[in-house]
Image (cartoon, rainbow, N blue to C red; front, side):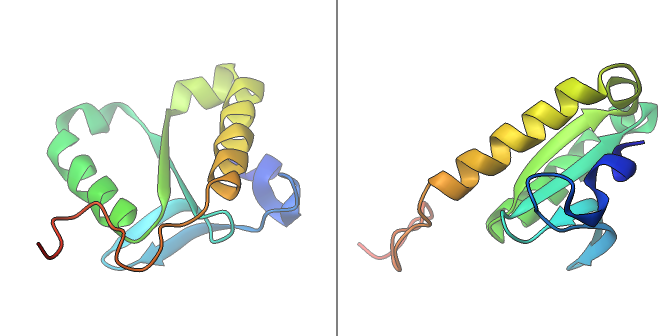
Amino acid sequence: MLWRRLRMKQMAGWRFRRQSPVGPYVADFLCLDPPLVIELDGGQHDRRKSHDEKRTAFLSARGFHVLRFWNGEVLTNIDGVLTVIREEGRAVLASPPPLAGEDSGGGEA
């Protein structure tokens, strides 16, 4: 259902890919510009919080903004989900990337 609304640049002209590899993971939906990863979670994700947190950290470290939605949320509130995706993508595009050497990690002292 979500893929039908994201494919073919229907979301603000952004190109999403479905089931796209990023390192050792496969993103449910991936957009490079703006850098978004959308993950759909079912009930099994309640038992995989640690794995999901590591996955999100990996993707975030590579510059992606990760959005997670429950499957039921997509089925019952697709317009709300699309609004969140659109707003997040616009916010990402509006915020400049950090300058070289301005990362949040503990750099040189």
